[in-house]
Length: 329
Image 1 (tube, one colour):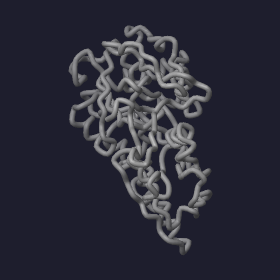
Image 2: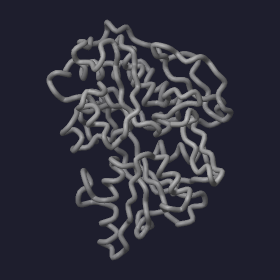
Image 3: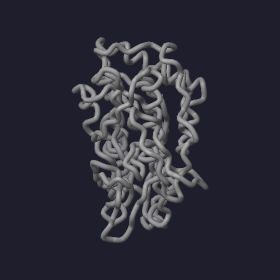
Image 4: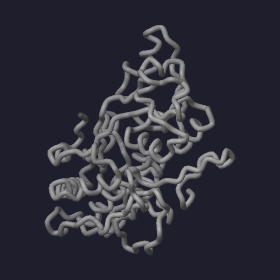
């Protein structure tokens, strides 16, 4: 991973410099403090200004404690996240993980009296990483689905629609759902976007490609990529006609690179995203503590402060949502 995150299409001279999405901002956001904060450095122009201070932390004693034997490493909250997926998770110019998901996870750790430890993980195997003891929680823009809650417990913390990124000017004319028929659509492997296109997982029997065929139109060709940046490079080089992603991510790339990308104007249903925690009896205290910390953040305004910093506040959930484990809608 480049310390400036991703350089897409270097051979074409198109450099995608990652910063969080916020109009009129001026500096790259800094992550919430970890055990060893990075030294302050100047950020690239055109990125959002960092918060003047880290989000306030509630006293650990006001929340449920986490026994050491429920953690991968005593004293740490190890967090799996698939980076990059801005503005929810990405790297700043100094190589620090930042984004709304990252800061929410870091603040939960701090409120539990733990040191946050972010582990970059491949999305398609991120649940297996949790189940294999490589992390304590996942916070990585995971939609809450019936398939996933068979494997883990998920605490609602965000909600997002699904949108299509197209080349600037929308040369393929993708404006309504039927315009997807016969097109090659890219999406990140293991996501609900792939399921929605193919009619698998929670979208069995209602896939977008099958809907095209039912109308006598050509099916959608679905091309999956390990990273969203790979999908964007494919879009940039005309190997796919659009990139299907969560709306905050889709919007982020188009704001950052209006000369390369645009939103098609087609947005599909809103879905809840969840923080994943092991669902066995050996992690009951951890689940309770993480949920309590999130609810406290929502109630005292820290949660919304973080989302606003990254332009994600339209996806905010309520404390009542966060208290409903495995809520899917």
